[in-house]
Length: 166
Image (cartoon, rainbow, N blue to C red; front, side, top):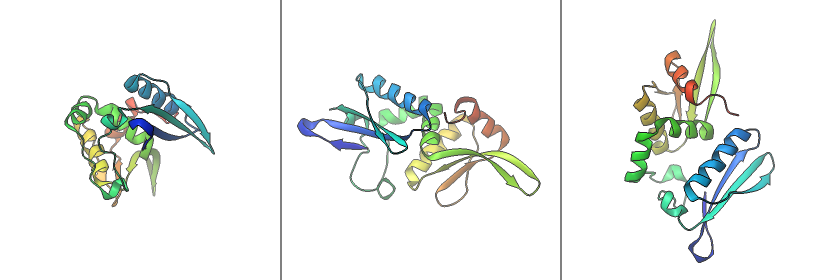
């Protein structure tokens, strides 16, 4: 989330589950790489809020706007589309870590690993599906908000670079 502060300085705020120190460290590293500044931490009940103040956060996230993201259009800027196309594994990792999971699906007599991604925004679900398509991961929309990756080879491909949440 971005919040406006005095003198046109924006604060990026990311709340992460405290159970996953690896994801927290990766987010801190990404903030430092993009903004070239330190990241603050504020403890929350069962979570950690990372924050960083910078005038240019609004440039990095032109999609920022008022209201719920699933009720407004989320469209990537040209430079963002180029980055997503060049680094589909990174966008998929971030999407799965934020709004996805991996679980063992059991149907009557057999079990198989499945990855699920759930988001109410059709634009964000499309980003997930497009990134999967770029690297050859088969997806299917399981319900109104859920996209599943259930084919064995596709789950194995995601496992190669996403791995377990840590």
